[in-house]
Length: 305
Image (cartoon, rainbow, N blue to C red; front, side):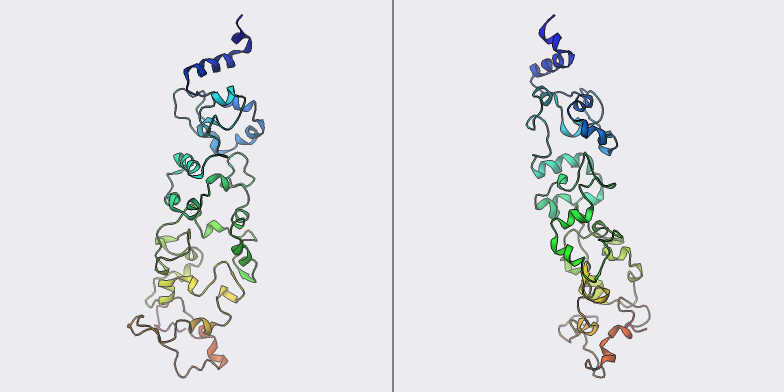
């Protein structure tokens, strides 16, 4: 009996494969011998059903769908230099590998030009393909904790007295943002925050929940329609009620209603407040007490009740 036969059929087959010079597929059963901890949870993973589109594949799904043929890896007794190891790949190569399957979603159409991709943040820095501890999207951690890892200033804003309830789990960052890149903007003169998601008809994500502000209205508030919600509101958190950027409503309104410029509906700039409205009088300092339809109105061009 030859030495190759004594070592068993697997080594005999690997020796023949090595002689050809090209790595070959060995099947997921071989991977289980060294990586039992991965296999225990991977069988419940959507990637478990990934297909190997190669006639020489031992099985039509599993590890080699992403990591490539593993005969050299097995013959060498392990290592990261003899198969596609995502932990050592450049970020662009990781993205290319993932997009072989994940490019059919419109939500990822702008992923190559997204802020994350341009900053060399790869898919596996946010996703845990083998052992995700959360139930959705195979994330490496809870979504807010992932985002807070880089966006520390945003984390601080969500600790303010008035904020969206992300920390409480009522909503998540992805309700308003698309971490894989967003479509072209239609508000804030094209200078919106990066990777802000969109609602229907490419509108601001605020309108997903605040549908009563959508319109269309017969009388639009140009500050809302052109510049967007962030003209007056801080979306993550604020020290002021209603997430306003200023402590008093009239100070916010006077940032635009100063009489300056040559824009507006009549091209005469934004009109100043009436001379009968003394801003030193407390009854005129809460503008929205009278101008209740400030986001837009179908009845009055001054947005009155």
